[in-house]
Length: 284
Image (cartoon, rainbow, N blue to C red; front, top):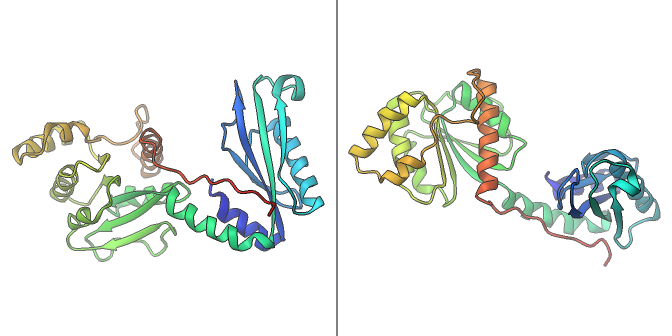
């Protein structure tokens, strides 16, 4: 969840807001440590710390804190079985912090840092049907997308905010500019271009995920070409093709996009791409 930007927006619009954070989670719990929920003075909220009685009591406590005005953070320690009759059985400690317009400058600074740190860089080559579906699927997810296509009229008129369209006659050159750790997805309008872009991506050993749309047959044909031009075997084996989560067989662009987005999230977590998760105290 984009925490600090949403919190800053709520404070600006409503004058105050509370941030509820799962500070610790032991045993079986509905959410992990670090899960967050933002609460407005009228009780509307964004995010979740687990649902059920735990979240209901967290909402009530957050509204009480907001009614009391900006002050020190408070904690709630709940054993889910005895305290809340929830079957999870674990123990959760929640931290409740309140913010108002006096915190606006600090929240704005945290929002900028959050934007810079949370998004994993992703180069998406191809603005066809699947590419268009994929940028929509990625829009709410923590990826900063450079969307690359060599055709002048390839991009739609409306593009999500976290996506930067890059019309270029030399798509392979974009790979030289990619920062280390970038994810790469190749789904252009032509197989020769797919081959050239994928080869350029595999030629770098600091790009942890290189995905190519296509079948196992396409992969086998491309592997022969990669070996012929001297791409190391380890990099060839690292190529993800076909792309998407195993077990999802649908070929419709939105289905492929959902499957690939899930795979990217799994890879991002596996590679432990850094997330920005600062702590802030409401009291000064």
